[in-house]
Amino acid sequence: MTNLLLRALLVRPRTIEANLALIRAQHIVEPVPNLWQIAQGVLRMWHRILFRPDTIGTSVDLPVRRTWRARLLAWRVFRFPCLVWERAIAPLDLSGLASTRERVIRHLLGAFHDGNGFAYDFVLLFGHDGALDELEARARAIVDGTDPRAAWLRDLVVYDGYHERLLEAVERAQHGDLGLTEAEAEDPDVSFSAYLAWCAARPATPSATLAAWRAS
Image (cartoon, rainbow, N blue to C red; front, top):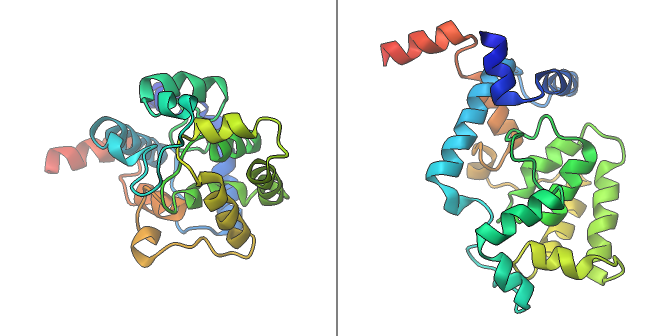
């Protein structure tokens, strides 16, 4: 029964387990959560999608680009299928732990992140040699227009100035600076380390989770 629940919530539990082993080896956070705890983190993500959708894919300060395509894609009903087609989002991998290096890079280049929201995905790339270098080069090509798909990717993220912010952030991340405030570093929506810590604080087994629900 537990295996069925894990497969339903995590989709690729073996891949996630392998990535958790890499995180454990890199000492990103201690203790490292197990699969059941990550599954509870996925449920937290679903709660955010359902009840706090305004915190995903929207900007509080950047203007929508003036192109017709960006104005159209500002409507999520039109943007979502484009993001899936572009492989900029993996709708069933809400933790990001089942995504490949290329998928995470495409996510950062094509899906809007507000504020320091890049930081979560930067940490996912830390375990892949040269991934931040590749991300920096591809973001720079969009900013300077040498990427033939630059106009499309700029419109796909909807908001003007996004890729410039991304480029600045990845340059800082190359030197270990994620640019997080103290509050952001403790926010599971922004910080991958905080997300893992939140998961690790959950009950470690389905029976322990059920007991906690009954107790509350």
